[in-house]
Image (tube, rainbow, N blue to C red):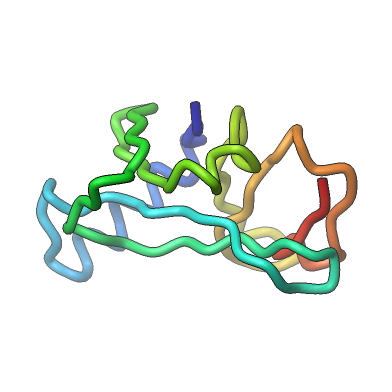
Length: 108
């Protein structure tokens, strides 16, 4: 399961409304090699399902990922912050053994 916090839900709704995207758009998340800790989070909006998509719905939001990324993201929560440490989406990932200072990369 991939979870969506209330703050992330509000921002997702805001972005979809600003872009004029309907309910057919969802959040696509993945993990790729890179970053200072070895693995990097990727997030985008999409409306084209893929055959290997793993689909989750939490807090009224649809989140999809590929099976490989799910191994890294299982039980993670998508968050959004506008705090002093930066603004943007981040993952609260219980599987990460360490993360970089910016929160964009991690290691298992």
